[in-house]
Image (cartoon, rainbow, N blue to C red; front, side, top):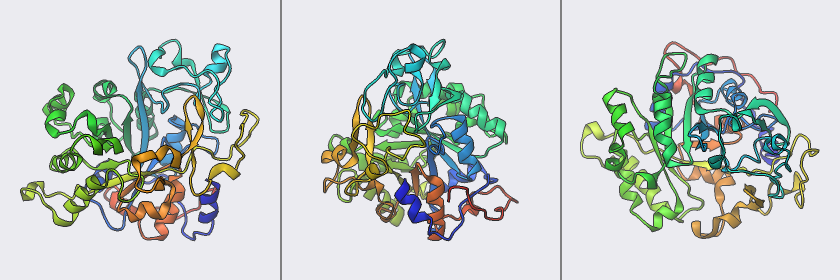
Amino acid sequence: MLALSLILSHVLSAAIAARLPYDVHKIIDAFRHPHDDLIILCAHRGSRWNGTTENSRDGYFRATQNGIECIETDIRMSADGHIVMLHDAGLGRTTDVGEYTGQTAYNPFTGQGYNPLLRKSNYSGFVENLHLRDEGGRVHIETVPLVTDLVQSIHDTGANVVLQLDFKEKDAVAPTYYALKSMTNAAGVPANEWCIYKTQAVWWKTPEDFEAEAWVQDAFANNISLTLLPVYQPADSWSWDIAASVKAFQRTNYSISSEFEKKSQGGPLQEGQDAVLDGRAEGNFDDEESRRDVADICTSFAIGDLVQPISTAFYDTANFSLPADERVNGSVFQYSENHAPVLLDIFAGNATSDGRDHRSDFDWILQQGNTWVIADTADLWHARLQAEGKRNLTRMLADGKSLPEPGRGWYV
């Protein structure tokens, strides 16, 4: 993150420094209909870091105050069936579960310490009492939230923002839909219309598979405008026809985009992305009603997990030196549960054409034709994209609203 910050210190364009009066339906429409002058940004787990915990009310509030229009968050299920906002399978890295239980706190630099699985832990009476931990090891007053807690927080703060619900487990999808069915934002828009269902494409390979689900039929019967975002993984390329899947979902009125975990040009998933780009160029749909620009694609900006902590007093950083190891030979480190961090290039394996994971390269991401990006540093991305004419936020503003006077964020 330090290197990116140094680059952006020379960007003359101001960062957003205020909440913006978005219309969530217009944000969704911008996903469906890409614009040359707008790349949508999604704050990865909220605007985390700088002492802000991930997947938290604080991180969400910071993202909306930064003017970011979308927040990507993580959904898992506890042993007693609660829908929890947590990225990792284990509780160790992001909570004080070690201290709470009197065991050795988990250390993400060594992969050692107490890291029980959320799936085997009850939320009621246990996980609900755990406090969130930030990237520097500090424990905060905020406790582990449920998806309904954060949706209610968005309502209570009056934010107009879209959520991407990144489901880590298939059986959490339907319960989430029903939990959100009676919830809205402050403007009265049903939560299930601005919470994007980001699911693994392999779970429902065709629209017919997806539409057979009881919860989907319930949404159709109640005129709820669902938004689906299938995620295609490199392994999908080797086992089934992802190009056909992409084209089929493009023809529906609920699939708003596709996300490809593509790590290099010409590697796995290239055919799926080409199917999207071909659809964008040729509009090869059966009729005018279906001729929508659902030629929207995304990847995530993999800045890495080793950011310079506010304080190293809480962690033994083992063999890692910060900031020296934030980027090594062009690659970045990613935490690996119950193991020491690993360079993304090593994780890449045969999921790339050249053995490199290019998702930490800003220019490479833009060259792939991505029309929205998930970023840990969404506010910094805004500044750089704005300088390149790629952040026309007026397309997403509510009718009659205008952008405030530009201001500079305290960290830019």
